[in-house]
Length: 211
Image (cartoon, rainbow, N blue to C red; front, side):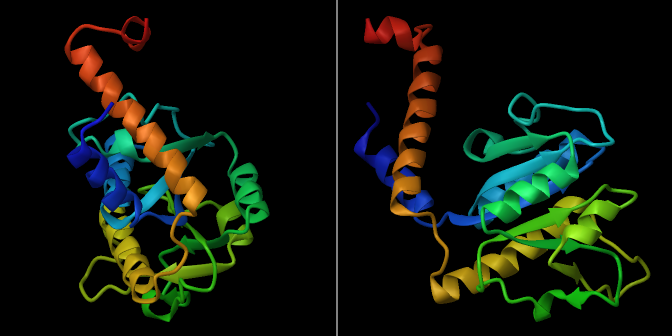
């Protein structure tokens, strides 16, 4: 139901998707979260977990088409009410939890080896950073060194810096890409998204088209 050219584009992008995920914890501004999700798409991260333990809940799929440059359509989001539940689930799935923190005593980004296993990279609230739960449950804490007067950078910039380094290490060793089954499932889901968009543009539902 999609063109050969579109199908090949999907395959090319999917082949560069990694098993790693990010966690956005208690983000206050939805546009910051959506800008972070845009970075996920750019650097090969398919899933973003969003925790709403202290902030107002929003649906990443319904907000910010402009901010995310439609990346929220292609990146999967999983929402949580409790940080501990999110991290426990990720650990059960075999993820190493790496939390970003404003603390020069933490490991610097250049000291992190992303190729040991699949990673869940945690980013905290714009003003308060990560939660105490994240600090306690993280396997490693990482700090992005600053050379200026400020001690931190914007959330989406932090996500971009971290994911660029992860992507660089992953591509160097060609490790932890999506499995064949995961790629097949993703291709099917993206094809459905594309088809639904075309049908809506013509005022036709998928049910009408199949009938």
